[in-house]
Image (cartoon, rainbow, N blue to C red; front, side, top):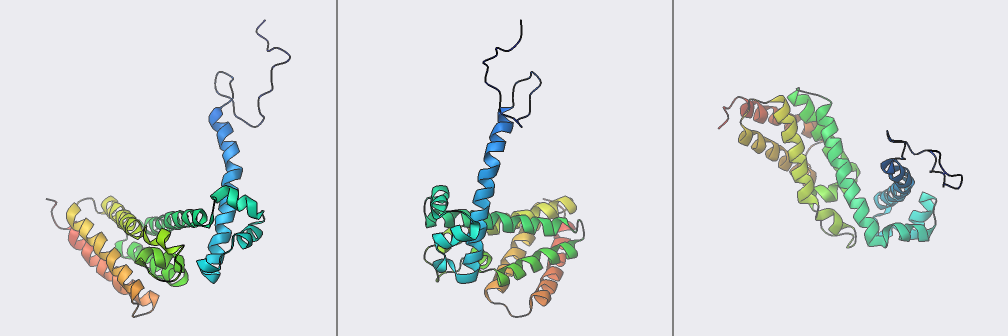
Length: 228
């Protein structure tokens, strides 16, 4: 009594048990989703590499499939169309860029100038090396009619998220500052960085150096201004 019947189906292996002995549905779903995520990531990686190398107009679903090591039909099954693949690529590019900005800021803690320099330099270098990032940041028009709409419609979002990342970092390390002044400083720096991407005048390192000095001044002023 209390034993499982002999014909009870065996639960799937590799799924962790909960305290009452039942299998964890969350673990099972995660195990099922991981291969699918790896597959989608591999396809998006291949599409990204080809878009950077040839421009989105030169990207072909068959070429993406071959580079990812899957069939052409698999690419269509995952994304539905080339437009669906563009959507996935644009979304991931935005997420990746904002995460890199946050990491650059966090790596330098309370050192305002060093953190600002790292984030600004990374942004300038990324835009110079990667036309996808430049399109996101500057709302660039022209070129591909198929990919850019997915990128440019996110330009305001990524600029807002970049400003938010800078403001979050500043608020953490400059807690006595005036919130409105800190927000103005963050927004000003982001807008200036974008303007130098659109119309660069000096090498990346030099531009980042000048803008980080300005960031130091703006954030120092905001930090010493009483809130309210």
